[in-house]
Image (tube, rainbow, N blue to C red; front, side):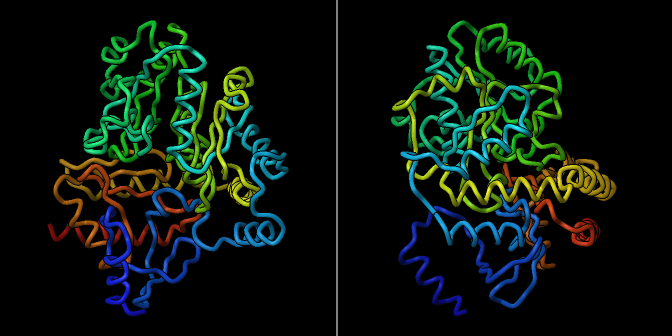
Amino acid sequence: MDMQELLRKDSTHLFQNYGRQDLVFTHGEAEFLYGADGREYIDLVAGIAVNSLGHSHPAMTAAICDQASRLVHVSNLYRIKEQADLAEALAAISPAGLDKALFVNSGAEANEAALKLAVRNTGRSKVIAVDNSFHGRTAAALKATAQPKYQEGFGCLMGDFARYVELNDIESLKAAFDQDTAAMMIEPIQGEGGVRPCTMEFFRTARDLCDDHGALLICDEVQTGVGRTGKWFGCDHYGVEPDVMCLAKGLGGGFPIGCIMSTEELSRTLAPGTHGTTFGGSPLASAVALSVINTISSEGLVPAAMDKGGKLMEGIRGMIAEDMEVRGMGLMIGIGMGDKAKALQEHCLNNGILVNVCAGDVIRLVPPLVVGSKSLQCFLDTLGSFMEDI
């Protein structure tokens, strides 16, 4: 592959809204990606916590080929068997009472749908979100994203419905609620915000305050859901049952799909004509997502994520400096590196390992759930050599 020709086409014909690395991949298998440069890379990014089953998993590949050979899209004007099968599978693993699914195409769309459901159901106009959260780049989801850098220049497209509280600050949380609060939107672990988990007290207090004020608790599980944290969903770690749960990323294993799960009663809020999507829950997307759930279950990847992640975090703690921090759950891990984060990312790349930097100074590790122990040890060895040199 001629990299210079690719760069020419990229710069000439593509929006330059991404800070891309000059890497091109030709194929992948499990946690490995193979570059046009002939190198093998250990992928600890997984498409930003998306490729649950890694690359080219036989079960997912078979589901794509089989479904695509029969039916790709028909629209939601008709009943879709694959969609109903997927909804049933999700209801079986979701927190109690979340038996109804609405399928969309992405995490931002799932969060938009959840916000629409909340304000329509309650008749209220305020939503509480958490500082440094990330809920998407569409209008309402962007307003709920409490990071000014993402909102800059788009104020006219966003309403004034969001109020922000500090993560894990109980008094700030209590002060934000009033009788006009429709919902609180919360990530069990902030992803783009730097892999920062909620404390048990904060998350459970959010549930209690929603109950006390008649508001809905919306759990954004776009990044934490579908086994990533060592349980099916991040909220499972807290023993909290949300009113609405938003999914995407790992649900499709790389195929675009999003979803909100809610209760029978709340689902009636979105009657025909109140919300919809052309592509959401297509036969192909639904069949692929069902294969992902079934494979995660049959291969025991949820408890494996807890085990692998625990061992990886223990290894990291033994290597990093006192002014650094490791945090997360399962295979969603952040290493607070300060001004060393970019340098570690570059060091990893030079050693054939792909990692991601989020929040400016945090190395985020979100590998495929199928990642092998040898690959994780390779990262630890690389981290060790980096720490010796700084």
